[in-house]
Image (cartoon, rainbow, N blue to C red; front, top):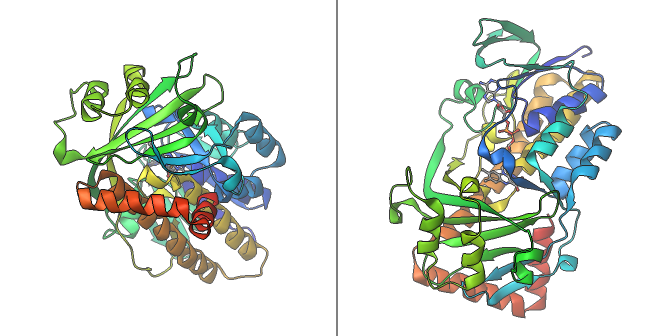
Length: 393
Ligand SMILES: Cc1cc2nc3c(=O)[nH]c(=O)nc-3n(C[C@H](O)[C@H](O)[C@H](O)COP(=O)(O)OP(=O)(O)OC[C@H]3O[C@@H](n4cnc5c(N)ncnc54)[C@H](O)[C@@H]3O)c2cc1C
């Protein structure tokens, strides 16, 4: 089947990566993106690109964009440690134990790299409203009254996907009941211990909540931190001083952890209600499909949402390229994509939900068991190696 026309709804991380991959393969592609520029607070943060995400970017992007990506990343050669609230190690891997290529990238820079060279195919200011199946074509309707027609429509329109709402009205995002409060501590000579400035950490206290820390070594270096806890245990967050609230919740913790929070610019501190996609059974394949957060939105607690969206983009690119080359039929190719994507996508959803629940657990027993497990893994070399290998993925 030659001359396949692909329409992507959503010019985010997954949609733009797919657009590059398809263009390089000579497939006609159009991206409809609602906004001119992403302005939400999340754009100010770093993102961790794991070996899956890196491979997808390398294989989809034109060589110049890939080189530009490598030029903008900060090496994510950090170790990973689990500590108590007193900064005593429960388990720590140094960077050499964690295999695979890892990169830290600013979201704004990643978006620039992804948009570069796509001017002819990205239509900004186009808010998708609904689609219509018309035989072998799909027609998309936009808020400005315009329409576009293609052979395949791909919903890459993020967590609140309208494409998903129409295609799979039963697919839901559930509130986990967990809140994360995140902030940035600029590294301008501040005296913080090496584990905080060199490694990624998860602080697992005995009583409540958890604190994640990661380092951004690029321009204007900072430590990103995120405190999470059950929303029901916290006061209303709307007008709360979030930094003061985290300091109150971490009373008695090691001073450097509290300094990290206290020394953050209040304008960098935001609260996020954590949601997670509920499992979806395979659906009858059609000319409309989904990728990324639009189908398997997950908690940020495994740091793999964007990496999974990139993996989808690469897999879908390969399937659609087979179709245009005449080596596969369209619907079976899309079906194969959906099967594979649902499997690894929802495995990532489960992992990130488990991490979120573990970090926000209110059971002292569960916390003690988790801390004991981490200490045991630390002490038993085969367990250590297995867990280090999982981190490498
Ligand atoms: C605090 C936090 C930290 C995170 N850290 C990491 C990390 O370190 N590593 C990682 O892998 N993941 C991380 N993630 C997850 C990651 O941000 C998402 O999984 C990723 O952005 C999903 O990519 P996507 O392309 O599916 O959707 P998005 O990047 O959200 O793109 C969707 C696009 O669709 C557009 N759109 C939406 N609706 C419409 C419409 N109606 N019409 C047209 N366009 C529309 C949007 O404007 C947007 O551009 C984190 C998430 C959070 C909240």
